[in-house]
Structures are given as structure tokens and as C-alpha cells.
Amino acid sequence: MAYSWDNRVAFIVRYLYDIDNNGYLDAHDFQCLALRTCILEGKGDCSAARLQKYEHVMLSLWEEITQLADFDKDGTISVEEFKQAVKNSCIGKKYEDFPQAMKAFIETNFRMLDINADGLLGVEEFRYDCVQRMVVDDIKVIDDAFHSLLNDDDRRKGGLALSRYQELFAQFLGDQSDNCQANLLFGPLEL
Ligand SMILES: [Ca+2]
Ligand SMILES: [Ca+2]
Ligand SMILES: [Ca+2]
Image 1 (cartoon, rainbow, N blue to C red):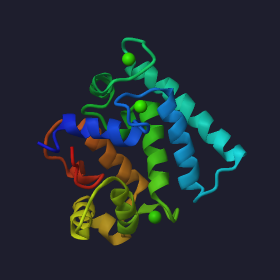
Image 2: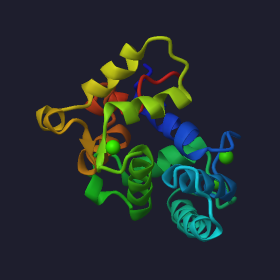
Image 3: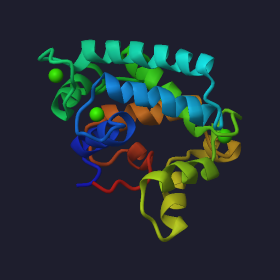
């Protein structure tokens, strides 16, 4: 059940938030996330002024996420706490009704993926993201994953616009069935 809701949420924690890879979330992850986002969006640039802006954004995001998810108030968020928070605030909801902190994170993620900043996540950008995480010997696996996400309108446009990415991300977190269209939003999951 690689695509069970439990595994999808665990994936988000592990690969999207737990940057220092120690199994839980704390302020340090968000500091690293600020640096990563700054460099990726700036295509290598990491000037002090830009970095400061990203740090501010990410640390406020961390504050907001702790309010949603740090139930035992120990300054860290475990995978279980994160799951509980997603249950409380995302299950069965549309993207618009997600907490602000989740929405900000999802939008930031899209901007990081959209390397050429044309407002669409295209197959090349999707590949670029997947190979940084996955060990893969056949590009077809990644391309098939990408194409499984597209509806007719997306195909006409040649990729996922922000609004579709938001919709699919909301499904990835908020749909508890094992079989939702967004399952492959991050490529095949290997957990
Ligand atoms: Ca961590
Ligand atoms: Ca905690
Ligand atoms: Ca793009």
C-alpha cells in the first residue's frame, strides 16, 4: 500500500519538510528549507538580502505549523503529530479551506519546481524534481507518473498550472482513499 494516506503523509514529512533527515520537524528544518528555496528559486544566487527574506518566510511558517501540529508543545513535530494535524485540518477539504501555513508551503513548493517560471509544471521540471529524490533507471516511470496527473486541459497547456498543483496537493494530503488521482504527484513513492 505504497499510496495509502499514511504513506503519503509520511512522504511529505520525510522528503518535503524533514530537510535534515532526523525523523522529526523543528525550526532547523525550516532554516535549511529557507536556504534551499533561496538557492533553487534564485538559480544559485544566495545573497544576504534574499536569504533573509526566505528565512523570515520559513520561520513564520514554522511558527504557524507548530500551532497546528506540535500537540505536546516540545518544540518539535513528529510524523504522528503531523498526521494528526493533517487529519484535523486537511482531510476531506478543498485547497482553499486548508490552513494558511499549508497553503503557503504548497505555493512555495510550486515556485521551486517551476524552474523556468512560466507558471506551469512541465514534464522536464517534474523529472528534475524526481531524480533528485529517486533512484531510477528508466525515465518512462517518471514520465508515466507525470502524465497520470494531467486532465485534458492540463494536456492542452502542457503541464500543471499552480491551481491544478494546489488541487492535486490537496488531494494527496486530504483524500484518505488509497487510489486518488494525485498519488503520483511526487513520482512513484518508494517508502
Ligand atoms: Ca528534522
Ligand atoms: Ca511535539
Ligand atoms: Ca515551468
